[in-house]
Length: 113
Image 1 (cartoon, helix red, strand yellow):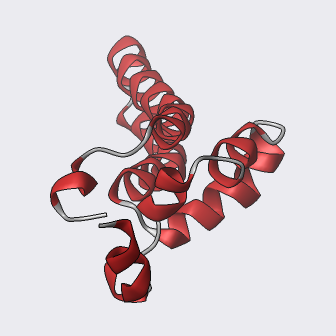
Image 2: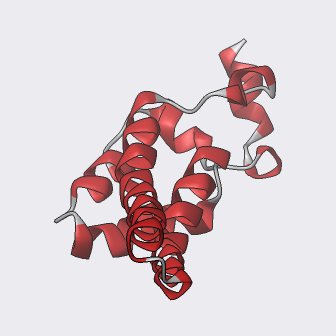
């Protein structure tokens, strides 16, 4: 997969990103609306709860292997294995999204041409 092809992740990865971005957005909105409604800025600390899912979603979008591991392990607990299915039993293009270019076998690239 060339650099030009690596601009947008495959569909299963996008679905996993959406699943992880939803709690991050929820906690962000919850804290902002709560702070505005009650007038207490300490409620903004709820935004900290959205950091892990937000960072996981960003890492999945960028193709980080660590984010993939976090999404699989933590997603099994949170989502009942949906992210595990999306990120493990996927087409080759999705697996290639998380494989850095320097780890790819150059003979595979030669054979694909």
